[in-house]
Amino acid sequence: MIDIIISVVRAAIRAGSPLLVGTLGEIYTERSGILNLGVEGVMLMGAVTAFAATQTTGSLAIGIMAAIFVGGLMGLLHGFMSITLKVNQYVAGLSLVMLGSGVSSLIGLGYIGIRGKTLKPVLFGFDILVYLFVALAMVLWFILYRTRIGIEIRSVGENPAAADAMGINVDRTRYLCTILGGALVGLAGAYLSTAYLSSWTDNMTNGRGWIILALTIFASWDPRGAILGAWIFGGVEALQYRLQPLGISPSFLGMLPFIATIIILVLSGRFSKGKRGIPEALGKPYRRGER
Image (tube, rainbow, N blue to C red):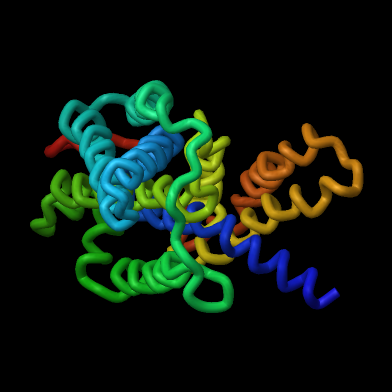
């Protein structure tokens, strides 16, 4: 029995790792006041870029760095649309989903069915990125809530006009957070294709980008909360494979993560109240001189 519990916990942590790092990216993006609904598309681009670059160069490190770079570029694109052009952020994000889905499918055509390189376990059956993601969550929490940089980010997300009056460059702060968010989501996709699944299949994120958006709410826009939330969702995913031998419908099992997402969204109002609730200016473009 203990062996089964340990196995499920280990599977939950591994399955939750790409969700964790992706949620960290979205937390920083949204904390600055920018809503990026394009997580699914960015994650797909990170996954295919990492896999293709690794296959081409033979280096996992290059593949992962390439995914981070592409994710950052997509974050920059979203920032340009949302911050500079003042495009509706919902529309801008959904356009990234379509872009990422289409381009990743095209790039990935030649890689379907190929088994790729994978990160090796280093301690307790986990690869090094699992530990780095947890450490990153704590570092990002410290920056967000214990440093001047974090105060500026949260100020821009809560009241950009007041932040501007204090001498904070609103657009620059939002750009940096959106690029960082895209880079971390790209890293989430890279982990999916080079460590967790070690292969490429079309639309392999399978809705994980939308789950990351729900996890951001569940975590109350706090990097520490993202750790628990990601592992819970990872456990739901791992549970699918444990229940299959019991004869439960695969279609129902495939719905479990999304059922959990709906439950989280319904209950999220209770968790997001107070000082760490939804950023006041989230999704609202800032025009200097307007309040």
